[in-house]
Length: 429
Image (cartoon, rainbow, N blue to C red; front, side, top):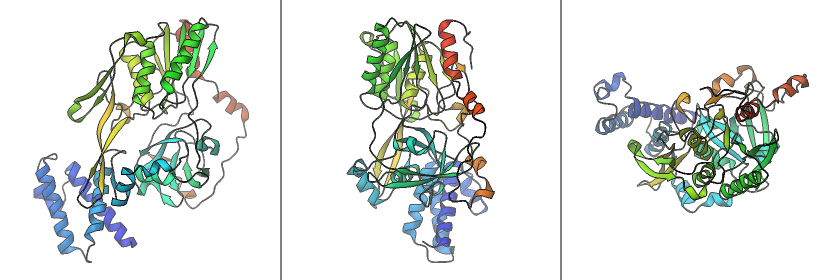
């Protein structure tokens, strides 16, 4: 497609999205734009008016197939990062689970300001070994700008054959842009590890909540209990993705009854509710839970259940806010729409995914921020115009290792230990 054609599709998609979801008033369609924003009939008439102007007034003969695809991409963009338009070829691959034959790099992604955003990386996975970090913004995947494609397309580009490489240009807070080459490969989700602090306070560091991890974590909790541990810190920092069923197993280890989480659909209708089973509680002592910006999805189920059921303090930073389920709707032309149809939510029905950062995720009961934790932000703040043409910049080495060492103090863990020892008063964030 020519530059002019791409520019036209982008402009068209933007116009249609604004009309379809925000009712923006433009001179051409002032009458239609006065209709209620969520009136489907009014939005369809606006859409038809745009197409009529394209067909009758556009300077060249339009390729309406490309126009339609561009418009559908724009419609998906106006919803959430996880809804996406799929081409006919992508629909076939999706249905055949073709992606299952590919391998990734061990990272959990979302979108911030249209850019690919790294929520967290798998410990000792390919991305971790290459130097990718949670909070990084991926500006380019190979030569493709991430802001020009959907989250689904970006994730598909990162998948590939084992041993192949993908080059990522990274924007990182308080650092120069850098390029990272990651070798795709198979990796295992690390098992939870334990430690004992201050003599009787156990720590369970969770790395993953993928299938099978729930029972493994419960075994770690039992091992600590057998050692005489009567207080536990469960560390969910940088745990993103995973299964809601595994999260329920972990929550139920500490909470013996009542609701733990919900899946909600349109109109906040409860699609499914998860409740604790009394016989599955294995630890009755005091608990403190650690979360941060890299906590998302299944880990948020655990954190929210601790807060809702008043099962100890949740300490750290507001979590990221994720956890959705999609359904593929095949369209007449063979292409499709991958649409978010439900969200994961707390036992009180508050969804973790939200449009505003201040409403997303789980808010800790005691807020303790690390000074070097990058917040999801407008990525334009990370773009240094003077460095745009640098394709392979290298990070500047730290000239003051003492400062770096100071930053390594785990103030969130320190606070959790203080709370469990009764040395810190619980205070609302």
